[in-house]
Image (cartoon, rainbow, N blue to C red; front, side, top):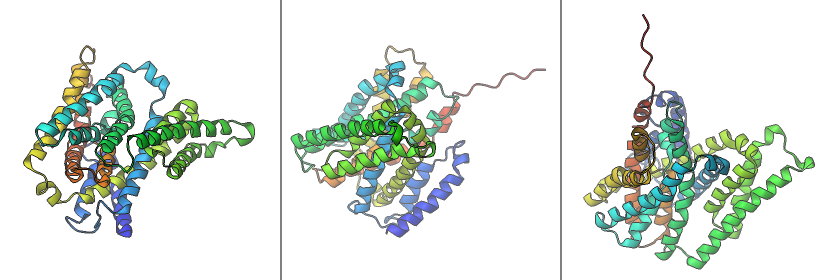
Length: 393
């Protein structure tokens, strides 16, 4: 299985790179390519990648990918940048995120028929956003800077903010081997490791006889991430929160390392994300989508995309002077991305009550979200283009 998975990933990666320039100008998307590629090559179609959710490669790849994503996301927004422009991202995170979770939970309970605990767990899994599926929005200069800043900050922080809620709800539902006390210890230790390790390494690097050369400076941040990962694996600390806090610490204690790492780190995270999306697509089969999910599940999935976040951000933006066009773009672009994929796998592998049903609903929402948001990002981005000046005679 591993050789075929590697071959499939390499072929799709080459194809994705070769179409990337055209994709940036059209509704094509590298993420959709890997999702559909995994779906076509999975056990439900061609059977080239006969992978199961219980296979070790699924859990290992998901953990590594989420660790790298959270570590990189933590570096994206220095606290100084938040202090300068925190109002809109603060509203989206402190009001929009809880409201999205709440509305999604209400939909899950009253439409999909889930018990309250599982409904809130599903809401927590689906509340983070991922702008990698809306790259045309956050990467285009014609899009207003405050909108790009809002989406970047929100997506960079909401993965880490939603994770403790997912872990606590899993523990309450007996879906984790440790109780609330053990979970609190894991989280606290992870945060401690994530803060102390970068501070120590950055302090050591600043000593005159230990200074890194210019060419190797990007590896300082890489080494910090690897060390945090290794210590968490040895101690049993929560590696995801450790990654997130380590990224934030590097961004603020060593901004030069963040800048050196930025391009390299984004590429590594992107590779791991695409590999995880390929595996996720291979787990989705026609039977999974059309036989194992009821019509109420489909109604829930559609409303989770078109109603939950838009309503939450509509409330969050009350009283602001954000133009209506920018509000609508922010309300729509809440793609359910990579964090939800991994959190859904955590729920499935936990064996908690109704975990299989939850994973099916998570999978359906993510598939619909990737297709919807990745195919509309360029279209919406073009709405912010300035009209050409009138021709002079």
